Image 1 (cartoon, rainbow, N blue to C red):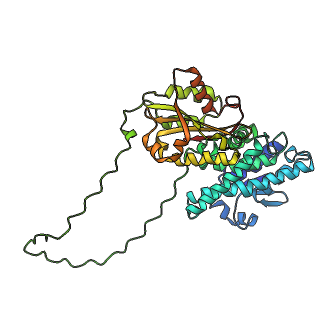
Image 2: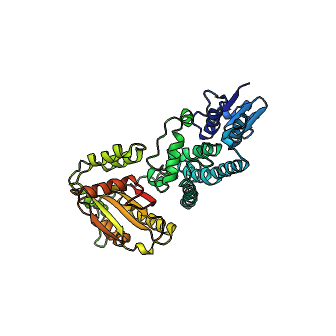
Image 3: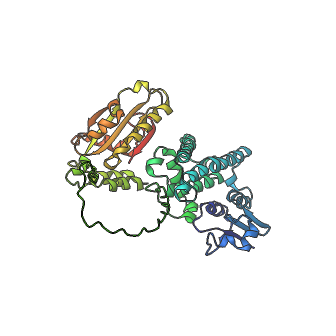
Length: 416
């Protein structure tokens, strides 16, 4: 009897076993025409898994459910499978990262994504908690991957398969480039994994989410229908309004437009640049950087360098990175009109904070200077486009070039 996997063709939990099978040269057949909510409710399926969850693997010795258990089973069908490492400590570390992928990464992505998909009630406080937990997990993962290509050892293991599949749903549905750019080593790792031939054969091409799904709108409560009153006869004489009667309320005045919306049209479409930046995974200089200068309109936009004035205070790495993250959050009011890169530079404290910003208009928008208090903490210098050295510095900052100006790049964040 062949191994038969019951799940939909796009199920990220089914991918774990299918990818493990590719690496192990084990034949696993995915059932055809599987319909979630239909196929998993049949008596035959419920005999294999009484609670009706997917995936389920049919084996000659009986069914197996739970995706990690299925992936382990498939992996162990091959003797001395390198997916389980080459030593007892490798095996322990692989199991460690598989547990981390389930409890820290997958759980937090689900708590953020599923309420926005309408699977569970949405609560802003719960979402904030989930995002904080996910950032903590990805931060730890980013630190590990800064020194490691793979989770364990020097080749793909089952831990990499499970973690990548758990990250997959987040990357395609809710983890936008502006979010994942805080974790550059996690980004590098994910795109490296999904482009491995055995991964790509199962998953196919992967496109990162461009926007966070909106919060589902609550259905408006049905209005009670009042019984119709009998029409009263209109009085024969029309009474004049009394002197003390209030006039009808005036309609609210339209909200004044942002001055930047009144500028002459620009040939540069900011969203097109942001999309190009987000979607360029290889040949960044040849594609994204060249595309930026092809799009750039010096009459409609301006480029600015910023340098933090008080770098001597930046003695703790995570505090410095949090400081930059808070600044980017407060810049959200100008997301429609700006693109930015913020770099934390240096391998030892004090760390230097430097940035590059693209703003609509020839100057930094006044409403940004007025409302974002962090602006005065930076020295702002307009980029001189006639200076090739300054243009190259722009390229290096967009690209997160490392080393940057002769120093290690501790962190790079993108605002888009």
